[in-house]
Length: 110
Image: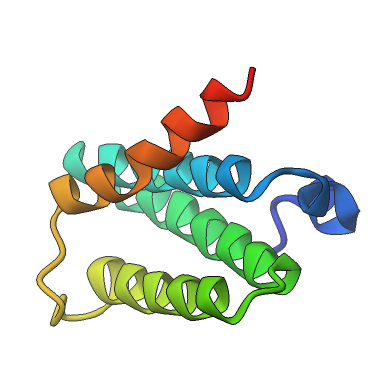
């Protein structure tokens, strides 16, 4: 997997708040879902890969064990939804509902 967010990986990602990081991850998830609905597998796959990259950057930047556990579970469930058998029973709606509060929280700061 090629690194898509080189500038963020170089340190800028850690400057964002946790809510901003999660809102950005949610944006990539939305793009992956939208492309999946349009049946464009290539673009959906690329957005999915960017999602994983941002989750990994976030995992690398968290300090609390609770956030680490949650992010690890989110990563596992997203991989299961987009590339696995969806054994967790995730839906497009459930992913949108999960990330939407982070977007509101990130925007509320400004």
